[in-house]
Length: 257
Image (cartoon, rainbow, N blue to C red; front, side, top):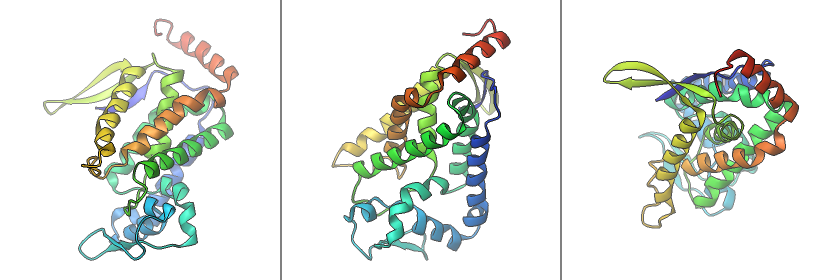
């Protein structure tokens, strides 16, 4: 199922949501060459993706992580590695990865920005992404595998949305026997379901027997980012904005919660 919209209008243009989406798109097309140039793609992931083992010093220098038959990432000790928890937020590993992230951000990001203001939103977004990166490193500190994606930061936005607007209705696109149907469900159901899937995928990673049980997805970054959003939203929320939004939403949808 895919969220495609919500019944939650904004009062202010979500400039920072659009800007962050624009930066992500720019990096994908002009730095990562939309995944069409394997060398450019590999270079972006290797040089600017976050490698937990490089940050902690627990990955063996010179170790090669294969990306394809002809390409590999080599563990190094470059000073720029310290920047990768930030730079990795704007990189992606494929079309499905970037489209999925951008769809969730498009649906939920504008309302969260509208509830805290533009500068606060950018700080909140980046902070959730950094906390998500820290959660991933904490779970697998010796990993030599590069991690990329905006998922951790966007997970923080989802956590914030859950706290602010749990009963707002979200429109879900659901394929049923090759037929696409749209259902309206409360946001809390969508977001708790999504978070539950992350937990189910991430718990096996805590076992020393199956450290790679997540299939290569940094689910603990998702979990860390989501929890960060839930915890931090009340520090970043502008209560005047949320009060204005609640009044406006009730005028537009008087029968909705």
